Length: 113
Length: 112
Image (cartoon, rainbow over all chains, first blue to last red; front, side):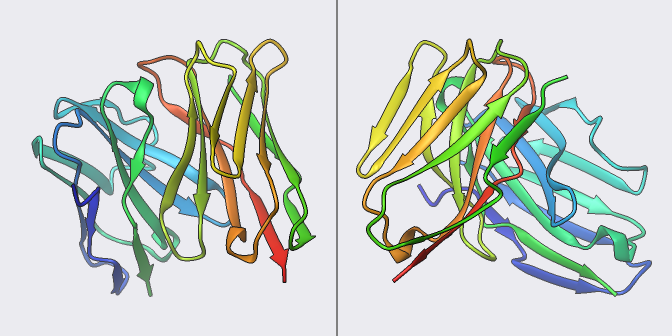
């Protein structure tokens, strides 16, 4: 298995633009998580899905952020409009039942200028 | 509310030394605990997962222990190498269906 695949690896965009981050979880994993990592706040859970259904989105910072999981092999995290304070590394992770832990993707480094 | 802390925040040791990283959590009713390694600019790599019924796990030069009653886990690295330089994070699963809480990490530097 190729692991959790995220794209793009790097994204630089101007303030106000829409940004879409993509994630392909490990085949057979039924949990998918989106995290944001910054120096100031460390790793923060934004949202997670179980069997493609959003379970907890309480970490989504505001309405500018949205996430979807249209099928078991694909998820997107969208920011519209983007702001400089959204600059961070965004990680996607997947797991099958919790007893087996997490597998993380390599992340998307987002810079909003 | 579960809080996870890691001590020390940073550690610098000479190559070959054995070392211990600490992870503490406030709510002992946890399900699993997982240790990760993060290299600069990279994602998180899972090192060891300790399930609720276990007390320790070993992989190569790494050994992780879990004491739920005291709210502590330690990651022991034997005979450290420069390639071990990275940030080490612990993650606590409160239940099998709840969100995971990460510690802030320990930045390790092994000096050749």
